[in-house]
Picture 1: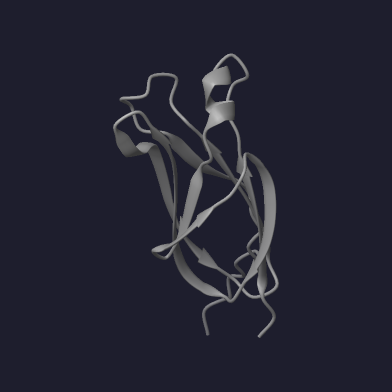
Picture 2: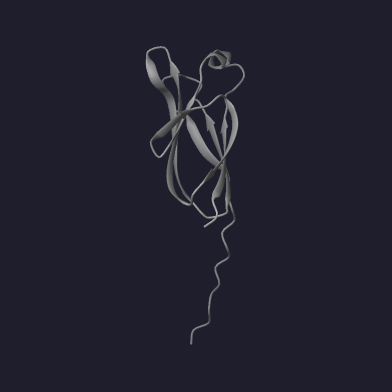
Length: 111
């Protein structure tokens, strides 16, 4: 089966300039990667995935966590956007901004 293509956009509002000093983390099914802020394309095998993103801040190693569970289809393209909350005590947001169109359902006449 062909892999699915996923682009992660790890970003924040520019007035939150203090976040330039920290490196966010992206967890894919529990495997954590520290990635710089920005866009990161990846190829993943089809299946169900739990994506989580956060950044370290002061005394917390997982601040403003955002999470999303998705079923990836073979050969499909997805874009996922993570944005931290404006207040460090709130959860961040992770949203699916682009996904493949599903085929139209066809109704068969009764026989």
